[in-house]
Structures are given as structure tokens and as C-alpha cells.
Length: 309
Length: 296
Image (tube, rainbow over all chains, first blue to last red; front, top):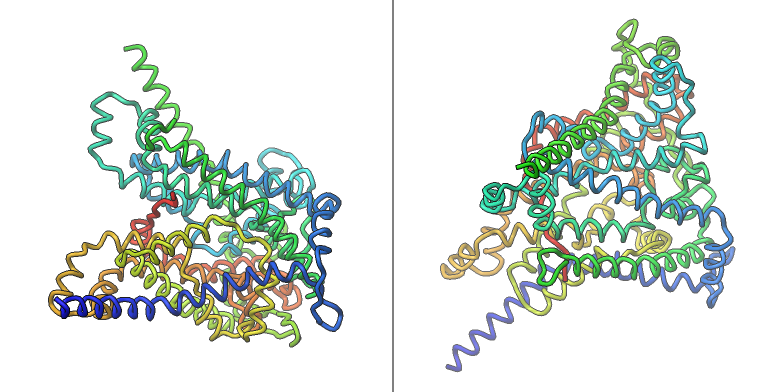
């Protein structure tokens, strides 16, 4: 009996050592490059850096400056507004289209592979190449094409203030289908054929099959994408840097782009880092509860959950 | 019967509408790309006079001349401006794409193995950490990351960039966990009965069985790294790759006498490896892309 217990203890200890050895490097990287960096972001927000790169305690001055900027700085206000507009545009336009395309591929109508490969283009071609091709096309080819075919003088879509941000939205939506369509398609394919067959026997139409059978069963995937999309509202900078480098017009600014340019742009200085960290913390404090609320509401809405609506 | 007919008509209309949007989106994606390939075969005068048309004369030499003209001026903070040619950019692209995905793939796979096969409070905690990392948005950490990475010498250091920074948490952990859970525990149990230890089970049984899944993640990492411009732009200025090079080249093209058709030829050349790789392994990649949920 004693031998059995000590053997069991030995096994548990050896398993614990094994787990420690295997997890040590990954978790150390996580602790340094995620946890420590984020803790340092919070610390940095309460500091000032002088011209000799000395750090001094700044109290709440950076947080105050960030709050004032959120109200006063037109660039920052525009960034926040545009970030939300872009998110809702991808949700309202992109999500239904993604589901529709995944469903069409799932049903294996004509030219499946061809359309799927075309939608996947932005995922295997460089974002830089896709964006630069789109840039050159809208700058040079599209005006020529519209004038030849329709006889109209088209604006420079990415430079005209009335068209630049809508053009960015169109670009982000149309290049955003790639991986999400595949993941939804795989989720639909994983549904048991017996369930689909029962639906057919009961005489459901394609629309009913999509709404009442498929969507509830792929709901976990919908939840994952929606929640991570909300979490990324203030992080995304879209194709702005590729289209405009550091000279994006104000009406196209996104919060990710604002923070990026201020941190690594040609005119950025380390002395701005505390203020930028403070802005980042405020964005995090807005986005975090928003993300958790959306997650909770979507989990409550789960049609497969008991008592779900 | 009438309601059945109405139901079917609505369904048909939905599918047709979906197809209509699919055709529109496909055209919006394909037309600029096809235009850029065709325009890359024009001479500069033909391009200016007829931007959106078939070339008067097919100018294939754009593809050879771009190799000599592709020179990129890159400003490296605290070091100055350096000029890089095609060979250096291509070599950097290959090195970054081959090397950078290795540690993240292994790190995530090992963590997913422990989480999926060793159920205990700690591994449950790690799953919660993964969900938190995925859904809690941390904004504005770039300044802090720059300070820390410069402090430890990782900034602009190829080796340390490749070896470190591979946190295992994120979508790929869900993917690997799901893949490991699909492997029958009978294989492990049989190995333990035969006297194998934890290390043997991991390296001689589980990892070989996970090769297809790891291959998918590595391949996606390779494509991502080949096409990545952000990492060389922010973290590895001394190692610009082709993606970043093409970006900077559009600003320095005139200085080196390159025309827009030649720039477009450069775009096509840069895209060739990723197109070949993707098309040849498309089926495997698409089949293996599955993600579980983050409920909990």
C-alpha cells in the first residue's frame, strides 16, 4: 500500500516536472511580452519623460490630458468615431455576407472553388500588395475606366474628403471575407448530415435551414468572431498606413492609426509615450466592459442554450 | 401548398441575391489584380495614355528591369539611411518567413497539448487566461513594448525577434487544443502501458500525429511572415523584406528610374511565392481551419 502511494506521488511529481519543463518557455514569453509590457503601459501612463530621458512621477496629469484630448482633440474624436463606424459597417454589411457566402459554398452550388479562391486572395497575397494595387487602381485605372464606360469624371476616391472614408470601409469589408468565410464553412460542414437530412424531410426551405438549423449550430463561431471584433475596435488601423503613410486625411483616421503614428511616426518622441499609454488605458477601459457585455448578451442569446431566446 | 411555393421562392431569391453579391465582391477583388498584371506589361507612355486597356505592345522587359531598379532607401533610427536591393530584400523575406513561425508554432502546440491532455486546476486556469487574452483588448501598449524590447536588446535583432515573443495564447491555441482533443487518448494510454514516459508520448506519438495541423499553422505563419510589412517596419528596420521594400519603393521609384508598370511588375514578382504555395496547399489549409468557441 505504502509503495503504491509513493509510486503515485512519484508519478504526480514527474508529471508536474514534465508540465513545468514544457510550459516554462511559452509562459515566460507570455509573462514578459504580454503581462510585463501591459503592466509597464499602466506605469508609463503615470510618468513623465524629460528631455534627458529621465522618468518622473506625473500623477494623473497624463490621464487628465488624455480625457481632455478625447473631448477637445478633433483628430482623436474623429478616430474614435470612425473606429466605431468601421466596426458597425463590417458587422452590418460584412457579417451577413460572410454567412451567406459560407452557406452558398456549403451547399456546393456552381463554381465553388473559383469563388472561394478569389475571396481568399487577400489572405495569401500580401496586405501591402493588395492595398497598393487597390491604391494604384483607384488613383489611375478607375477614373479612366469610369470616364470611358460612363463618360463621368470620377473623383480620386482615396483623396476626396467625401469619398475617402467610405472607400476605406469598402476596402476593409471586401478584403475581410477571406479567413472568416472558411472558418464558418468548416463549422457548417461539421454539422451532422443527419440533422440536415431531418430538416429536408420536414420540408424546410434553404432560408429556414440557414436560420433555424445552421446558424444556431455555428453560434459558438459567431460569438467568437463578434466578441473578438468588438475587442479590436480601437486596435485596428486598417490600410491607412499603406495608403497614406503618415499623411492620412483627418476624415479617415482610426484610433489604431492615431496611436501608431504617434508612437512610431517620423515626428514621434519617447516623451509622448506616457500620454499615448494613458490614451491606450482609457480606450482599454472603454473597450473591456463593452466586450464583456457583448459576450454576456450573446451567450444569453445562444439559441442552443436552455431558455435561450 | 401556396406557402410552400412562397417559402421556396424566398429561398431562391436569397440564394440569387447571395450569388449577386458574391459576383460583385469577386469582381471588386479580381479586377484591380488583373489590371495590375496587364498594366505591368505596358511601357510608361502607353500606361499614361491608356491606363485601363490592353497594352499596345506587351513589354515583358519590365519584369527583368525591375530586378536592377528595385532599390529601397530605408531610414533606420539612430543608424541612418541604407539602400537595399532585390537580392537582400528577397533573402530577408525568405529568412523571416522560414524562421519566424517556428517558435510560435511549437510554443502554442506544446501549450495546447498540456491543456488538452493534462486536466487540472492549472490547465483550466490557462484556458481562462487564453479567453481573457483573446477578448480583453489591450490598447496603446506599443510605446511600452518599444521601451521593453529596446531594453532587452530584442529591437532590430533578428535572432531575438525569432526566438522570443512567442506567447502561446490566442486563436491558434484554440485550434491546436481542438486538434489534440480529436486524437484518441487510447494512443497515449497504450504508450504508457508499454512503459513510455511523458516526453516519449509527446515527442514520439502526439507530435507526429499533429504534423498536419502544425503544418497548417506553420504554413499560415510562413505566408503571414512573407507578406508582413509591419514587423520589419517597426521592429526590424535593418532587415527590410520584399513586402516592406515594395511599400518604400513606390516613394523611391522615380529616383531609380522605375515607372509605374515596373512597380506593378515588382508587385507581381513579390506575390508569386505566396500564390504558388497557397494554390498547391489550399485544400489542406482550408480543411483544417476550425475554431472552437470562447464561451465560459
